[in-house]
Image (cartoon, rainbow, N blue to C red):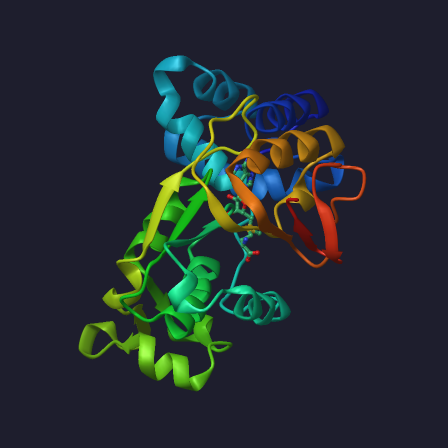
Length: 268
Ligand SMILES: C[S@@+](CC[C@H](N)C(=O)[O-])C[C@H]1O[C@@H](n2cnc3c(N)ncnc32)[C@H](O)[C@@H]1O
């Protein structure tokens, strides 16, 4: 069923998602918002967006608010997306004997394709049982559930090089036909946690050699980009790298990091 949304209602929802996640929904995103939320109105038996807004902003319905955030985030991702970044990663990983514990953070991890792609590169370089770990975080709970399972449709994996598919992925049989499971030997190095990057004064999450922050800044305005990047910098080791998506840039966003090449930055 489709419901009409008036300008005032749209404004209320776009302010809400901006305040929580930092995501800017311009008027052009009205169709996106109604397309994604209308099923919740139907499921909960509401006739208008105003009724749903009241419900979702009532503190006793915090679960529904999280559900709404999950619906309004765009989670597109795939394995080996923007492969130059993984070639770069491959070059900067030090030799095994110099590594104590190599740590990489996929900071807008979605369903985990980026984190598991990184895991394949680290396993090749430092060994399947080597001293490395990956943290994947996202604001959306539903994508993290899939990320933790490490289970994908085969069609989502077409960019995984055949030798990695063979070595690190298990093809499903029987009821699981058409699926692919990331092997436990990689999954044991990767952990996923929910984290909103748009929190003022966010706590440090660890000390990372590399942080991937790809294809999420595009949803943010300049003050939000500045806040999010400032939140990440304390968790980056000196000499560590921050990598953004190919259509993104930290120009004017921070002066703490130096540019190595477009989309790749380093903490002095
Ligand atoms: C388009 S996906 C990018 C996935 C992956 N990094 C890639 O490049 O393929 C963007 C992700 O950012 C997440 N996201 C949006 N706002 C966020 C926030 N404030 N904190 C943490 N994650 C957020 C979304 O839930 C979504 O999964």
